[in-house]
Image 1 (spheres, rainbow, N blue to C red):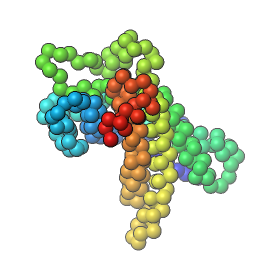
Image 2: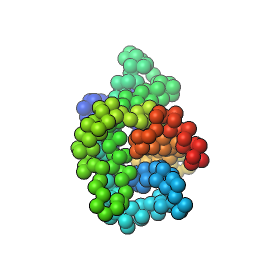
Image 3: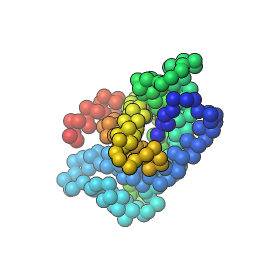
Length: 265
């Protein structure tokens, strides 16, 4: 969550980057089983194309249970290493750059409240810049997460995260590490901006309820509400991003979007 304040932070960029990266990494470790299930569900239509059987994965809980049963509990954390790489870069940069970018838009001598439009613009910018740098880590994470249970004797495409980076570069070229960059920028820029805008609104609404004050509980509820709102907005773009990263057959973002609408909706 991008913190909002009318006054400039006393914490240095390095301090913001480190604390944000640490928090993001902690969240990644605890939530990656759900993220792995999300990616499997997003790519499921492709996996069962032409198959008359029922979809393999059903719902979030069912998908987690199926992965754990067929591949082992540890499979839910497949992709954790590039996931941590991603959070160190994306999580640190999107928060660390927010105040400098906001100051760039309003001017260093600005006094008073910053308009909502400037906050949204700054949040979108930092989200877009951060994910542009972190896109290779996101790509490798998705590639590792998509590999399910393989038939006996069939080796995995990648032996680990470092092998995945080098294999992609060797077989597909350096530019392939930025596959899905377009929808990834749109997804993370929109989510970052939506989180900021909705966080303030949810917080204001909660504070109008008798008994609520500006404390940790209010901030937690505001963060949950803002996160839910942002994910709902960014979900369609997230599906396109995951499919482009998990399947190299798509020619472009538009091609992936059109084929998804045509075949899966």
